[in-house]
Length: 191
Image (cartoon, rainbow, N blue to C red; front, side):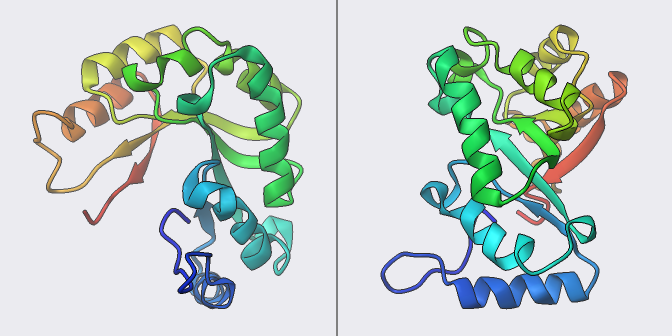
C-alpha cells in the first residue's frame, strides 16, 4: 500500500483502493504491506478501511514497519507503534519490520533501542514475526544480522534488474540472508 490510487486533491481514492483489495482477496492475495510514512501516514488508515473493516482478521496478513528514519529519541518509539496499531485497527501485526535499516537511518536504530522495543512487542504478542527491511549492501546486512540474530526475516529488493547491481547487491544480500538462515520477503519484484 505504498502507491495507492489518488484523487485529484492528492488524497487516497478509498473506493478504488477497496475495489483493488477486494479483487486481491477474491484471488487469494491476502498479504498487505504498509508503513508509517507511506502516503504521509494515510496508507495505514486506508488499509484499515479497505481490509481490516471488511474482512475477518484471520483472512489477511498485515506487514508494517517502524520508521527508523523519523526517530531521534527513545520516547518516540512506543507512541509510534501504538499509533500504527490504531491506524491499522488491529491488536497485532503479522509481520513487523525495523524499516530501512541502513546508515541513513542510524539515529533511529543504533542510538535508540528500536530493536529491543520491537522484541518486547513480539514477546507481548503484538508482533507475530519480527524482521527488518534494508536497502543496504550485503556487508552491512551481514553485520546487522550478526548483531541482531533475533530477526526472523529480512525484506530485500530483489528483481532481475538489481540481481547483479553493484550498488543494490540483490544476489549478495539474498545469499547473506540465507547464510544467516533468514526468510526473505521480496520488495520491488517487478522493477
